[in-house]
Amino acid sequence: MQQMKKPSFSTYLLILAVISVNSIRELKAQHACTLSVPPAEWKIDGRSNANMVRPGDTICLESGARQFVWISYIHGTSQSPVVIVNNGGIVDISGFYYGLKIDSCSHIILSGKGVAGISYGINIHDVNGVGLSIQGLSTDIEVEGLEIARTELAGIAAKSDPDTADFTSTREKFVQRNTIIHDNYIHHTKTEGMYIGNSHYFGQLINYRGKDTLVYPHALKGVQIFSNHMDSTGWDGIQVSSADSGCFIHHNYIYADSQLEEINQMSGILIGGGSSCNCYNNSIMNGKGDGIDVFGQGVEFLYNNFIFQPGRNYNPGSNVYPYQKVGIYVGSTAMNIPTSLGIHYNTIIFPKSYGIRVSDYPGTTNLASSNIIVGPGMFAKEGQLAFIMKENPGTDFSWFNNLTSAYFSPIGFRDTSAVNYDLLPGSPGVDKGSYIDNLNLNWDFLCRWRPFARGYDIGAFECHDPILIGVPEISDPTSALNMIMPNPVAEVATLNYTLRENTFTDIGLYNSQGKHVLQIFQGVGSVGRHTVSFSVKGLSPGEYHCILITPTGKTSKPLIVKGT
Image (cartoon, rainbow, N blue to C red; front, side, top):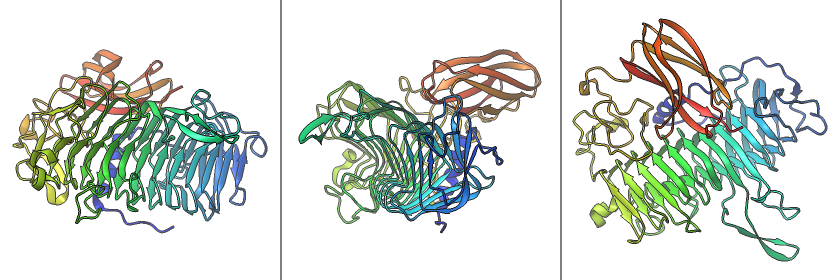
């Protein structure tokens, strides 16, 4: 299919995102196929033509063109998922009402990484509906290595909407667990790039036997969306709703969202009703919508995000409602429930109107700190209010220690002409970041060690100029973390590391807020390669960092923990 030309900076950021999750499980180029599915066969059903497939088996989609694929009633286990993978080349799917449907399945890995050298081995394009649909009470589904383009609806939809037959998908009867979507390329969709979870978390009326009935859609627990590339979506780039626990959206690159200018469907990332998500290390560039919209609930952190020119291409001549697109917009939720929102260490460049705009967020201790905001479009009219604006004086939302300017020069960026927003050593943001309770960061937007010198730097980028301390802390000549397998992991992981001299060694696991959660090894280590296994049972699903510390430095690798 036609290859789309990507902006050079997107390639740069995608490489960085791959580095940040470089331990993700890779499938072997050769497969022991339990079941081979030729292009002429469109249905894979565990009750009929795939009834021999068992947990741990591999279903191979043979390369070639087909109109659609329907996968139903295939079940693995948490330790032995069923892998469905391309074989022999690219699986090309196009021309029907949908592309690929996962229906009534559990513990499935759908992968387009079945052939070495092909990043997106399953291509879904030019379909009259959703590209990939995860539905029918499907749960524990992982998706990687798909290219999805030119769909009439969303690129990926993952939810089971309430029905009028037996209400099996309502909240009291079903939970969608461990939805993991990573390393996919989604572009030129008619609506959302990803539509994850039902947007009516607080209830919706459906007609049942002639009577309107209030129903509550199912919740999602354990959502991981990372290292995806989104380009030119009609509506929101990524929308996640009803994900009430264990939700992480990170290391995604989103370019040119909201191209169809559909009111109320315009953002790079939308954290919708009922969702409690940490959203970090995302790049959102040149979209027509807001950078990030927050309508969620519970404890959430937005940090280390780089948001560039949100809304600038949306009716450039007007900056009144509904054209006032912002870097980060915080809206009210449908119910007044206890919440806490933290917006920290983000870099927001040239938002169309405001940097951060807060409508009416319930709860207490909502805070924005250590962000860089440059050039909001409303600055000439409203001055300092254009950087951070709170609409309702009664809303418990405060901010301090943010670095703001109408122009680049006072900030001290490395090279804005090359879209390089690293800070120079003399920047007023260097070593001036604030300490944030429950958010002790260990890395910056580029996944480099943070803090580098005496303290945290304001914004998403930590200055790593050697002049600050002489020897970069991230460089440790005495040790190296080589590999963590499997990754993602559900129970037991194995870590390989190397010591180049006999030295005191401390290896620990830290959560996404920088809290130490597990001691892996501590003591004097000897020269050579070492292997240590450790259990992650009892840890909540999410991203963690394995950090090796010696007297001469620190090194780290990310680890994704899946739910069981």
